[in-house]
Image (cartoon, rainbow, N blue to C red; front, side):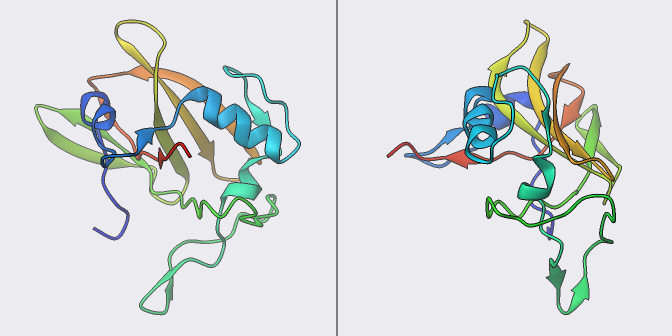
Length: 148
């Protein structure tokens, strides 16, 4: 419960509350542009992970995860991303992996009928990566945005 929910593709598409929507890859591109990185949808954004990651997250006074010494974590975006891993989904059972080393977010975009677009960061790398992942097999975090 500390790390939030993990959604399979279908659940992610309806996870946002009324007035909000699931981020798109174009939203990630706009975020990258805001922080001076390459901003083409569908590309990796080098040097952006540190602007998203929070290095001081704690729960009841306990540090939640170790710093990544090769990444200057500023959380300039105020997204406070924490690497909470993801889940493999098999018959509605969740098997969690890569806690503290991986953070991934579904977007509202499809790559193909069986693949959805994901944005993710990996421990020790200051990039936000683009990926196309199987919709039914994995559960990731989501970020919602509100259009003004």
